[in-house]
Length: 371
Image (cartoon, rainbow, N blue to C red; front, side, top):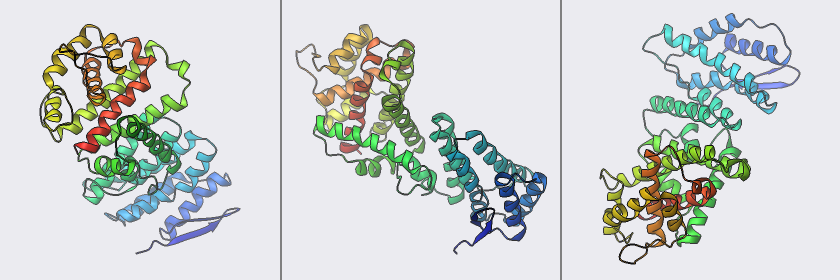
C-alpha cells in the first residue's frame, strides 16, 4: 500500500508522511519551532508519540514514517553544517522510541532509519567510527525486522557499496566505490587480473555470510581513502602515523585470512599457502613461507619487507617468489608482525600505500580465483 502524504505551509510548503491528525499536528508544531522559533510543547509531542506507537505495535512501516518525518529538519541543519542540531533531533526521536520500549517490555520499535540517517551524517563529518557503529546498528535493526541476514535495506546497500540504491549519502558512497575501483584497476594492470568492481561486489560484498567482515572492509576503505586523498602525505610520515597504519594493515590481513578460511578451514595463515599451491595458484608452500620468509622477517623486518616489495627476495634454493607469491608473503608476514609488535619499521609509513596495494592484490586475487 502506498504511503499517504501530508502537506502544510510555514513560509514554504512542506510534505511529510501522513500519521493521522494528532501526530501530523505535532510535527507541524515541531517544524514551527525550528523554522519560526515558536513555542514548542516537547512533553506533549512525546506523549502523543507514545500514543502513536501504542496504536502501531509491530507496524514497522508506520515506525519508518514517524522517523522519516524528521529528515527534512535534519537535512536543513546538515546543509548548514550544524552536526550538533542534527544529533539533537535524532536523539530526541530515538529517546521517545527507547521510552516506549521500556514501558512495553517484549515489544520493539523499528529504529533502522534514525540509526542509518545519523550514521551517514557522522560519516559526512568524517567521524567514521561513530558513523559505522550506527550504520551497523541500523543493519541489526533491519535484520530483526526483515528476519534475514541480507535484508536489502539502506544499511545493507550502504555496506555493499550499492550507492545507486542507497537513499542517503550517495555521493559519499560513490567516492568510496570509485576509490575501490581504482585499486581493482591497479591490480588488473600489474597482475593481469580480470576482476571488475561489479564482480567484487557480487562475489564478496554481497555473498559474504559474516556481515562483520564486510563492515570491517568498508570501514577500512573509508580510512584508507581519507589517508590517501584527504591528508597531506607530509603529515603522515612519522612513527605515530605508522602505528595507525599498522592497525589498518593488520585488519586488512585478517580480512583476507577470513575470506580464505571460508574455503580452507585451517588454523594458521601459513597453511593457506599449501591450499593455494595445491590449486596451482601459488608456487610456494607453507614450508618456504614460514621457515624462510617469515623467519627472515622476524629477524630483519624492514630489510625483508623491502626485498619483497622490490621483488628481489631469494629463497635458499636461489629461486624467487612470483609477484603474486609476493603479495601473499607480504600479507602473511605483516599479519604476524602487526599482531605481535607495537613498534613498526620506518618502511611502513614511507611506503604505506604501496604495501596496501600489495595486500589488496592478495584479496582481489582470492576473490577472483578462489571464491
